[in-house]
Length: 133
Ligand SMILES: [Zn+2]
Image (cartoon, rainbow, N blue to C red; front, side, top):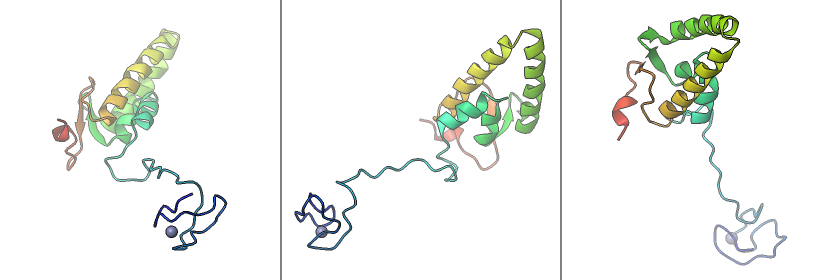
């Protein structure tokens, strides 16, 4: 293999480069940078947002929205818990499934920088909506 730092040829089983001494752990692994869970506010995962949104719209809180459908986000989530409970009784859970799918798609869109279709306001200091091109 060739040293990733200096390019010198080394035996395949070499642990260190014979030229510069850098550790040759594996044959040129591509640096994998996953968006960290505790990163900056801009790398919130769309997958995480959609999974959380399927649970009472929790993804909106995760995404930092201040208001959802005109309601403060925590109140919206609390309302959704009640709605899910009632929908579970009255519609045998059908409405819960529909709501979960709608919220999941919307959360995914919002986390991807799209507007989505559920009206939501970002918190103060967040300029999420203005950075969409
Ligand atoms: Zn080297």
